[in-house]
Amino acid sequence: MASSKGKRITIIISLIVLILVIITIAGYFYVKKQLDAKNSDSKEKIVVEIPAGANAKKNWEHFRR
Image (tube, rainbow, N blue to C red; front, side, top):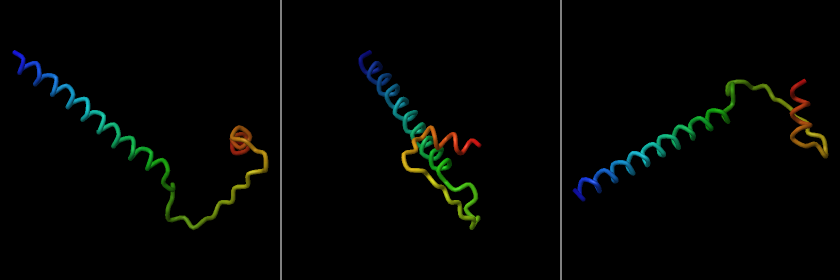
């Protein structure tokens, strides 16, 4: 009986670890894809000017226009 209980706990812990590994790998590829260039073949340069004293909210409002 004790062996069966230990085996069950080992299986549950293994499944939890496997799920966490899968989530971590999927998250890595998701973030990597989001950070990649949208069109890596484009040679167009984009200049972004951030005024002194600007914060994230002001910058977001500038780009929404």
